Image (tube, rainbow, N blue to C red; front, side, top):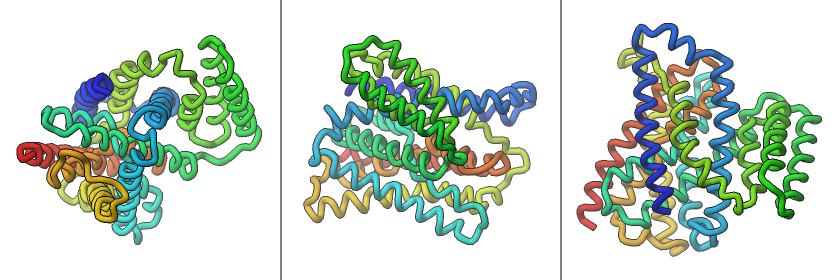
Amino acid sequence: MKDFFKTEAAGGIVLMIAAAIALVIANAPFQALQSFLQNPTLVFAVNDGLMVVFFFIVGLEVRHEMAHGALSSRAKMRLPLLAAVGGMVVPALVYVAINRHVPGNGAGWAIPAATDIAFALCVMALAGSRVPQSLKILLLAIAVIDDIGAIIVIALFYGHGFHVLPFATAILIIGIMWWMSRRALPLWPYIIMATGLWAAVLLSGVHATLAGVVAAMFMPERFGIEKKLHPWVTFGVLPVFGLVNAGVSFAGMGPDSFGDPLTLGIILGLVAGKPLGIMAMIGVAAKMRWAPWPEGANFGAVTGMAVLCGIGFTMSLFIGGLAFGEGEQAAIRLGVLTGSVVAAVVGFGLLRMGTRRV
């Protein structure tokens, strides 16, 4: 667990640097570099290729937490599950309330419902060693459940049509992988099957990232592939994603840009809806004795943790890219970056103040 937190926290810093570089490139006279980063082939390779590896790691983390960690029993799962549900439903409602009269904007309801694990854990690590371990584990568990929810949402709502034959092929490959997982086979057949599953899911119209999660469920733990891939994903895949997707040109933007319902809905969903939903469910769970209050943490520290869950960044940008065309991406990126930065600063401040009194 300590190694995981260290890797994720360091990866969050690299992710911040990549986002900052993307912003500089988007607002400087680097037209050749801008054209390269916006090349449709590169965007497809990153968002439908490299991000599948990221979701594969997410799948491995989910399986590990369900087997050995923060989600390994009903008692452990109850509080983060309730908090995560509140943290997904309320920001979506906030977004919908702001965009309900804007034709076409309804597709973005899931954008503020996500949490960026690496970014959030990075800020929590910067808050100091006095942050209770219970809050670190709770943040991780909420973010993992958020990712599961995001995967389901992507699969159900952000596909590109549906084709029966490739989908049937994907089901067949899943059956083969299930059979393989019960045999003592080397690693290379799993790699071949996982690649075939990615191609079949991509051609079926269901978003290809689902293939990464499903493949992870049948990957034997004996290979230790999570430890091998995790640094590559954290320090390679996610920064590249940030570099390609986080660039926002501020040309022509002013204070009025933040009044765009799309941008405003994302910002308020992340900054206000996310912590309100999480804190409401934690409070109800403690009051009704469904789950205990996080050990060693006062109200301020728990609120700081809930605010940090509003750092959507990677997942929010990813969902925004699936939900809208290129014309809306500037407004989405402005909303996601602004909301995530505000959540990081406010959450950091609340954690520092809360942990001083614990």
